[in-house]
Length: 393
Image (cartoon, rainbow, N blue to C red; front, side):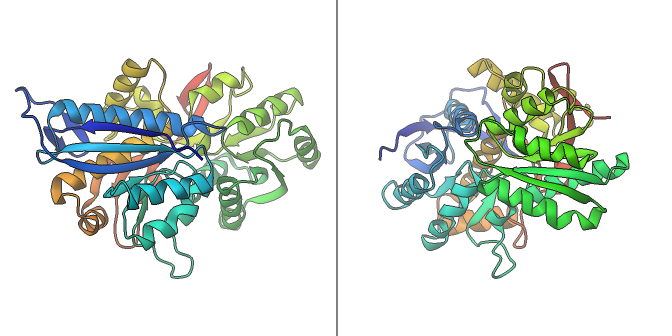
């Protein structure tokens, strides 16, 4: 197995609430380094997650570099590509901790790979900030409390399900069909869709699954059509969520309202759907709709800044997934600037001092009981309109 390493030396002049501010004077050349590790699905079938995460992390690293250092030290960002594979993710995280001697790890990109590396973070007592969605990443089911050394930036699948169910309740709709991919993300989302349905008076009349490499969901949708639901809720990431939409349209089912999970948060999905995404709804974070936010929205400034910088550097629209890395690395930089690179102090700082942190996916308030730190307000309900995102009425 080959793990590709990308090292970026970065520096900072002034860091404040997740925003990087350049100094007017030429920064003093920093000495020494702070090592931060990252594991993303840069290549493979889930590269749509890891590629924007890697690009975002590198962009932030360069900005920090140009601004002058963290406590007079360079930030050495070491990134490994997991290719979306749990075994490679394990090997990469272990290498970062034991050989590269990083003080904190960002990632992985997927729920499944994140769950696979949790034991390493706990065993080696190294802070890890996952960029994946499942609530299980920060919830130890045995203790009912967060894992000590693990945090995450994406909104949980629980929050996404509740956002969808609240919307359905406002529409007066209760009869739904659910579809989910048989992956860690899909299984966790499906579990929450089922668990929370009674709370919102939702009747699940069909429950269909498909594999992450499946290329046709016509059979599942045909079964669903026979159940005559008012709404379909699909839980997947990657090509499958686009395939489902194309099949849904081809079968003439567009009279049935369609919701995607927060895993749909990339304009590339809209493009690949070739018109089939028009009218679908999804709960998404602020970075996807920066220009749609009002001037009074507390996230507007950071979302607009990130959007402009990312588009200028990479000549492509950003996605939810890069935003997860933005939130994680800016939190890490804030911790390093305050307590240095001592692992235990970083962990304690994240847990006790990340309060009111305005990020791409919400305002974070970590605590000993909450290592996600987001509220139900972290989502906006978005609709695809004229081939782009728009705020749903």
